[in-house]
Amino acid sequence: MPDEAPSDPPFEEGHFRRVDESDDAGFYVEPRLVTHIDDDAIGALREHYSRFLPKQGRLLDLMSSWVSHYPDGLESELVAGLGMNAEELAENPQLTEWVVHDLNADPVLPYGDGEFDVVTIAVSVQYLTRPLEVFREIGRVLRPGGGCIVSFSNRCFPTKAVRLWQGMGDEGHVQMVGAYFHYSGAFDPPQWHDISPAKGRSDPMYVVQSRTPSVAE
Figure 1 (cartoon, rainbow, N blue to C red):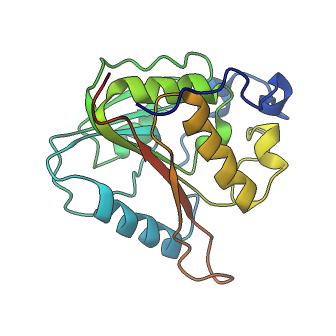
Figure 2: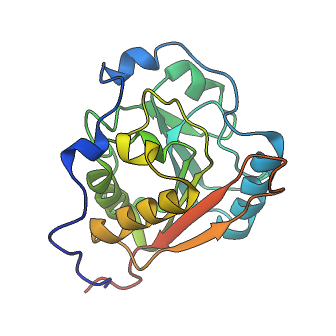
């Protein structure tokens, strides 16, 4: 089992406020069939996924949209998508099933315990207003030894990214996501990777990932 999460995570309620506190469902009502990182960064993320996503696995693309950035030809038993816009999710050819669900309104994932081998969150973690609750839920729906891969760049919708994210640079974002894993109490110590494809010429890309304990005690 991972070390027991401290009872006093270093977060305050104000850290997760946004400039725009209106209902997120309204913000995402119009589909955005665009990518939010450039082609080189997408390629770097696909390459990273190709090294860590299992074949014939059960995957959950959390905070998904019309593209998941998974490698072409990935053979999976199931790829579930959870996102905010039905039209975007319906356009995603890599999803075998999908559901519209607002994690900021309800962090409880609509899946059973141990359903997935890997959960991914791509360029969206900055919008979570209840991250520790969501990460605990990710740990719950993963099988023992299952992985969670969180990727991000330096782009965002500034009115919807949380205040703490807005006040940090790339290194701070890595530490912040690592703290989500740690203080959730559901994961082994996280690892991070700088997968930026061409520094100064393309979008930077970072990954923080971890696994649930292999054997439950």
